[in-house]
Length: 268
Image (cartoon, rainbow, N blue to C red; front, side, top):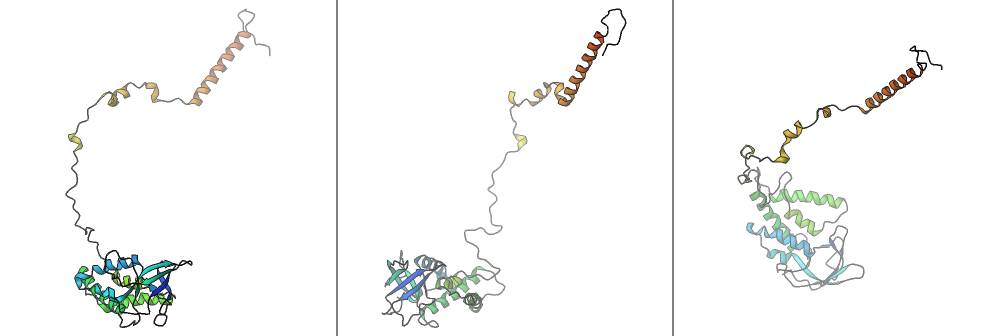
């Protein structure tokens, strides 16, 4: 269990714009400074427990978690949207626990929370060296230096580092240029391609013809006139020419009205 602190009985927490919970008031203001003091919500702690479980095979002792945090249960929601959480003695390792957790940072250098960070860093290094083929094994100092540079950037931007981000920076750490392959994802070249379905050769399958598939007969029955399409404009010009001829013939008949066999010009 977390170390005793009789004055720490409750906290008032609010949800920040970064979707993390931050302390606004605490029952023990003597030992705690609420400025930049964050708490881990149940969803976040569930993820931390899951990632820490991966480190057990490398020697991580999960009991360190109970020593590193003060657990709280939701007491009530305040009118201003904040939430009051009350101290509890429940263990973080119990199943189906819904707890808010405040890191024990009373002694930031040698306290239980600092020891927890050291532990997960050490076993994360073992995991990475086991799963990634480095030219040279990475060290704890390399990880801490890399993470410290990132945190300093946040400090320079005036942002407080939330404990969840501080913890997951270690639990999810992978050196730049490398990645951890998912166990469920097949590695390159491991895919099984022998189970592809067999397709029949098109030459081995003959299609039975019926009346709807006799394309050659349809082509023979097409009239020859369809091979050349007349231009509609040409048709109109031909009709005008024919009308002009008929008009000339009528004029010729009028000029021979006397019937004497001679053709006389008609009077205009």
